[in-house]
Image 1 (tube, rainbow, N blue to C red):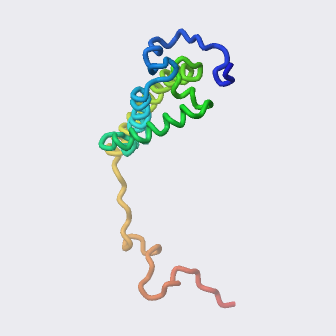
Image 2: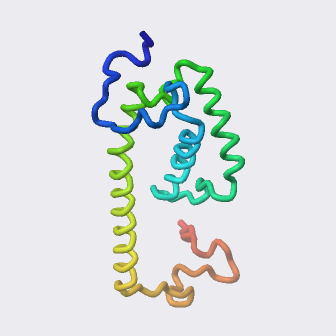
Image 3: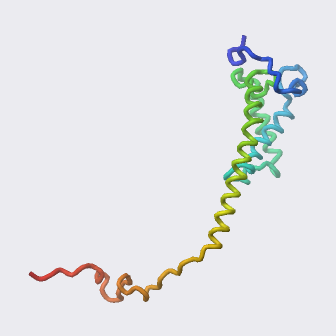
Length: 157
């Protein structure tokens, strides 16, 4: 038995995973892995701090090469099979966690955006106080002659 798989390979909560397997029926296909790879990067644009540079748009050829390289590493490394094995318990667990966590993260992002919007509106409605000019408070303005004029004078004894 594979120690990473353990018991509990029957995971009734995730349907349709058998259709993701490649021709051997053991791992997801390269195409499915690539789409998941792209989705993982594109999520960065949806979750604060909204890194648009993570989106995969014009660089799909480079992304495909990177995803294929990662897929090959997963194939060659038994401890990473969970990333490409839809019937495995780790893939199923990660799928369940992702299905729960992603909507939560998007909800938090929406709340943060709403709070920022409320802060902006509040700041626009609050009258701003004018900063004093140098001439309005002569005691804090530096005289043009002596740069140490602000310091207390020594008293003669």
